[in-house]
Length: 310
Ligand code: R5P
Image (cartoon, rainbow, N blue to C red; front, side, top):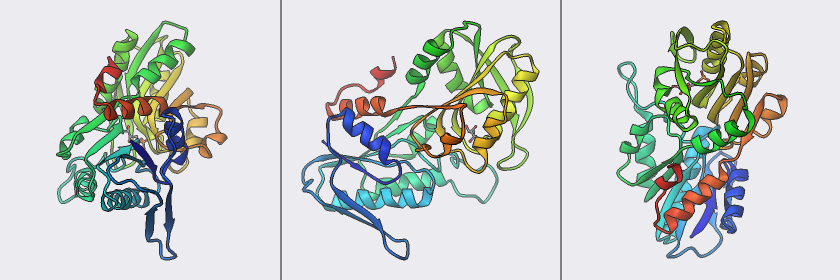
């Protein structure tokens, strides 16, 4: 087994490698003057099982292309099998036609990765579980729930807590964490009047006097979570903690969070936000590296990955 890292989130790759007591494959990934990507593998990988780690985060198109070129380079270097480890699977939100005459980009990206030569996918908290079906190769979708529940048990001592889904699409995710913590569930009725804009219509469930744990897969502009936190406070919630796997944090998201009703926002490091979070005392980052390393180890040893989440 060998690990190759793209440049999308090198810090996470290094942590995974450290955990597995491996060195990252010696490679040269660079841009030509016109922006084209060049990948060269500087060591023999013939017959090896290779895990190539790359998040499809900002700049999403560059990072995606880099992943595809890495896979192509590995295939042409006679790797025995190639697992694309994609901590943040960008384009996953475009998983259906919401309006006519649009692309299903999540399917296109799945085709590109498969056709480049990947034999297996490992990812974390896919926006929609059904995206696994866009691939005809195995997909291991890991969950951040064990990391979040451990943090909650350690830091949120008040037992009067409730998990909250910030929209109907997030109910399964919030319920899973709620079940692990043995607490109830509330749901925010969110509407999107226009792309990138969110509006809270109602809160389903009683949150009065409770510590609310808002759970989501992605925080992008921050609108969904900031508006949900405001609505929860208006309904009498005590403190609002937010647990999100992928911190896209575009535009002025960090500023919005700083000025919001949110007590703490807990993210994982599927996306490298080390520079952005310096501007916020509300944001905490938990590393997903140990979980990912353990999953990689289990795949390599052909043992169960799902057992990790029992
Ligand atoms: C939507 O279905 C996702 O789960 C997130 O709630 C959404 O992507 C967050 O976006 P934003 O932070 O821009 O509201």
